[in-house]
Structures are given as C-alpha cells and as structure tokens.
Amino acid sequence: MMPVTQHLHLHRYGPPGPVRVLAVHGLTGHGRRWRTLSNQYLPEIALAAPDLLGHGRSSWSAPWTFDANVAALATVVENEADSPVLVVGHSFGGAVALHLAAACPDLVSGLLLLDPAIGLDGEWMREIAESMLASPDYPDRDEARMEKFSGSWADVPPAELDDDLDEHLLTLPNGRYGWRISVPAMMSYWSELARDIMLPRNGTPTTLVRAAWTSPPYVSETLVDGLSSRLGGDFTLVDFECQHMVAQAKPAETAALIRDMLGRA
Image (cartoon, rainbow, N blue to C red; front, side, top):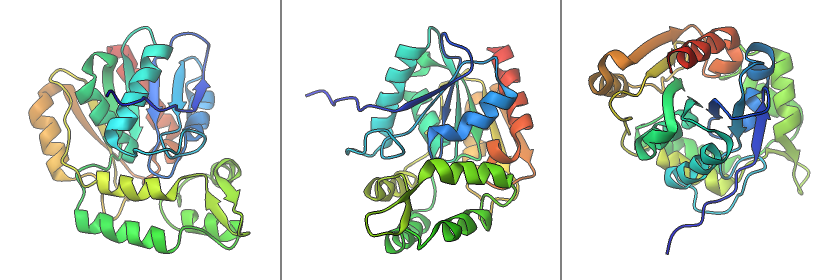
C-alpha cells in the first residue's frame, strides 16, 4: 500500500504565481518565521513556507520522519511551482532539504542551507529529547521568551521574537504555555537528526551558511567535507557572525544569497 501524503499548512509570500523559493523551517518552528525575510527583503519573489508535519497548523498525525516530510514537500512543489525551486532550509529544515534534493532532484534547482543540523551525535540527541520531554512547557510567556532570548535568539531583534511568540505560543489546557507543536513528533525528529548525512545529486548548486556563534556547532566537518567532495565547484561555504537563527539575525545577507542563487539557476 502506498503511504498517504499528509497535508501541510502553507504560508505564501511575495507575488501570486509560481513559487520560486521553498523555505523550510527548523525543529519546533513554523513557516511564518520566513515572513519578515520575504516581505521586507524579497518582496518580488514568490516564496512558499510550509509548517512541517507535527508543527504549527499542519497535520500532527504520524509518521514523523524525513521521508514523510519529503513526500509532503514534493507535493507542495508540484502544486505551487512550474519549475524546480531553490530550497532554503534552516537547521532541521536543512536536513529535510537535503533529503528532498536526494529523493526528488528534478524538483530542486539549488540548496541554501542555513546552519543545517544533520548527522548529529545520537547521545546528544537523546539528551536534548529527554530534556524536552521532562519540561515541554512554561509557567508564563515571559519564561518562554527568556529561554529563546538567552539562547539561539539572542541576536534577533526583540520585535521579531515577540511576533514569533504571538504566532507560536499557546495557552495549554493546564494553564501553562507551550509551542504550537506535537511533542511526540519532536521526539521522533530528534532521533531523525542522528541518521546518516544525505547528500544531493552531483551538479546541485549548494551554499551552506555556518553560524559562527552556534555552540556546540550543528555543522560538522563531515558534512562540509561530504558536500565539497560530492559537489566540487557547485558547493560554497559561508560563515556568518551570528547565532543559530540565521534568517532572523542576518536577513539582508540571507536575502542576498537567495537572489544570487536564483540568478544562477
């Protein structure tokens, strides 16, 4: 029996018409995170930004795997674009983008990987998953905000962080606050991040942005070496002086890379 492709809630930005960019958010995120980048820095480019499975307003039904997200994203590209698209993936979304490019190369014109997380240490992923499972919510909005601001969102404009909380933080039935995500799905996805690295087809233009202030780093030398060996001159490595939320901390620089890659497509 063929698997059923699950529904993704889609955020569309830019002009109407065929999509040129597919933007894929990170773990525990949502597609609306690309709104400022698109509206303020890329207003002329049609961009689709889905909520991944188990996130936001997309289906929360299992399975929660790279393969299930790839199938759903392929459907988005087939329905919303009339030619291969540039796939921009952040963190976990970078891993999903690599799996999409490997499984459906004819749908992908290029990859822009923003501090991608893939092929990570399994023990590290277990520790993160256990910590999240033990404390999945917050007593109030202020604590949720502080957790982000003291970590990977430290260099993101405060208004951008507040907008993210407005969209993504919910009041739970127990009166506490939690993200608009399926916690069981997150447990599965932390495990997915320990899977082997997936590389795109030869000839796929790929730019990897490494966030220099991410500690410990998500981008491994194994990933960089693998992409360089596979792609040669089609691979570019760029270092940004920022924390993990690359598109929010460095939107102008991220937009410039997107325009450059679209110009080469």
